[in-house]
Image 1: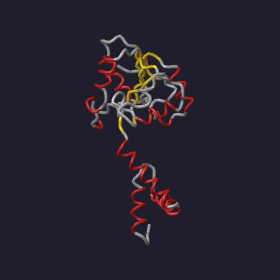
Image 2: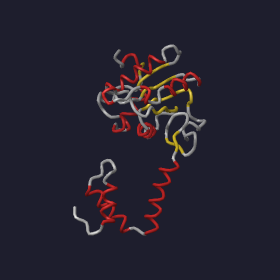
Image 3: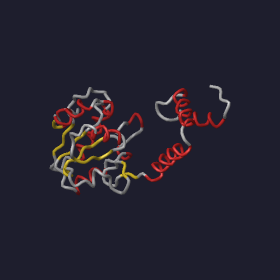
Image 4: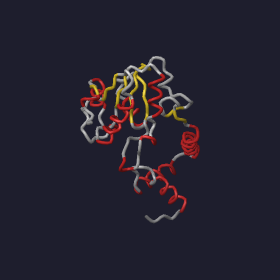
Length: 205
């Protein structure tokens, strides 16, 4: 692409750094902002900058939050004795959109993947173990992507929790093995949550 303005080119280059945004889409976004009122563009940039500088991660579950504790963990109407273990914040959003789960979450911030150099110590696993030991947790639901890395992570955490008397389940495999949780439709995800089964039946030892 040839630009007559280096300012426009710089803006396009920055937009194109976002996931799923190519040069043409980046140009369309930049040109759209040029058509907007200056105050609107200033507000847009301020909102993004404020999100990046002020957003926090829940000290209890590692979900995004405006304060030290997220709105889910601070909600007294949620079932705090049920924890749904997920890989990422996007999975929390996906499950919440089904409106079928009323417990709390624990975001691992990844899954065990030796080939990618990701081990248990790099994830929020130890904090999960401590949380289960400290709180009166009755059930731990694993809602990880149904693939080898997800199963490995489940098996590892399950072994760590073995001494504790806690019910451990995983979402039903309505989601195809090898699929991505965040791309599952809401109905499939909701049914998987409702029809969860004991983890021993699905995780290979």
